Length: 631
Ligand code: ADP
Ligand code: MG
Image: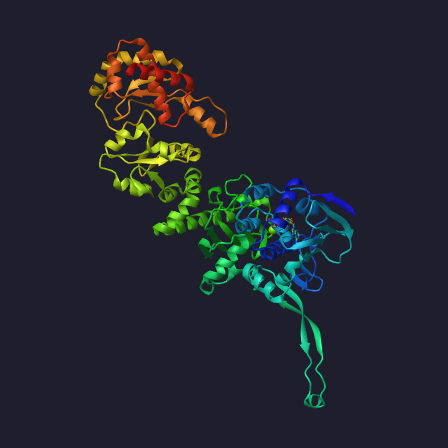
């Protein structure tokens, strides 16, 4: 007996499975069948591409049996199997990356939680929702020795060599007392398999015993003979076992598409969008794509799972190739099945393959056009946007070929409407003189909406886009350049005044305030890059802007976007020449008051933009001094 300890995270996970999840337990069958199917996929591929593994007459098959007396359920497959190392790494000591995030993502809502199981790649452990003990007996294809892994789901498991005829895996589940009547029945197992695994491409055979009553002849009946009742073993295929995507669209019902989606995505909701395409011609292939109703949980994790599986003539090739679609479309689930690729296509070849490149290109176009169709239904599209707007923004940045198309799909908050707006609608609403898309970017919608920088735009009825997903908007928006020749302009940069002012007018004001701007600049020193009068304010006395032409500032911005610590570059302070504070300050001779007010003009402008002020104590002291004077 070789005892092994589960790693801490796996232990926590098992603890949750055994004690916390009560609803939707039936999904353990879906998860084990899905693993069996994956294992057969792998051996199927090896058989077709590697002489070493070729076995005559081998056909992938999954089996299920149950024994009420023994309180057990058994699920087996003749797939690729696992050796001792595989057993330890896949279902043992080493926690997969998904394990920790699953434990973290668990909320009190038990139903929701069991829905997360498949998405986090922790499917196998779901068996402990119903099992008091589990044996996994497995033999890896091409190897001699078989192994038995067994555990009751507490802190440890045993791993021992055993004998087993053929390659594959048998999972023997001892059911908890109160789960026996629940799962050890033919009807229930059949229903669950039909519900979740109908289109698994291999037959799922249910083994069961049925009472058969002997048929008596008339004579025997007359003679009062009793009919014998015997138990007869039955072996019945309980799933469809076809590649759903190869069936003609006209034959498939919405429910069938949805059921298949659930089986490949481990999602419990119906998909938002289904796109089934068959292409004939130079390249021949079928694609079936789905957009989930809710964005996949791991979408914003670096180790997210690829959503699209690649098949060649119905043979599974890979489900871990992230380049089958561009990364911004990583929320799309589904399959690509090519008729032209060779079966033994390798990773390296895949990435440079013309056929794949072609399929990828047309798939992107197809998916984008489906999203465009969805956009016609305002209500539905609003839902899509809550889940995928950010992904679309990434697309604008990543996919130069489809940038124009994606820009039409992105939605923005704006000063002009409660609903999110498209750029087309923004442009339509603009007055005739406007020639740019104005935006303000930050991480707090409320702060942005109250920014003094918006004053002149509001006054002049110019709509400004409110971009509050700073992390991404700040990098991407400047990179967009233009939408239909309208440049994107950040209103917090010095280059985009809302109202054009003649050079003369500008000069006149500048001269009038020359002394005071110089004075403030001296007082503030390195805290500002420059001080100047502005025409972008109406109610506020001051605002801070950044210098778009400052190469250093741009550099710092880029470094920050890449996750580098960078010191904030000093802003430009703009003062409102029409504001009472500024006009009075211009004629004040009280130097200590001017000093305090100069700092207050800077600090309040920073606060209004949601920026930190460096010295809060001095800020309060100055405020107190001025308040005392005013009283
Ligand atoms: P996932 O299927 O998302 O990888 P699971 O927890 O369901 O996560 O399974 C963990 C791993 O255990 C699988 O990736 C696979 O390597 C292995 N495994 C589980 N069941 C089987 C099986 N029936 N045959 C071969 N390998 C299996
Ligand atoms: Mg699995």
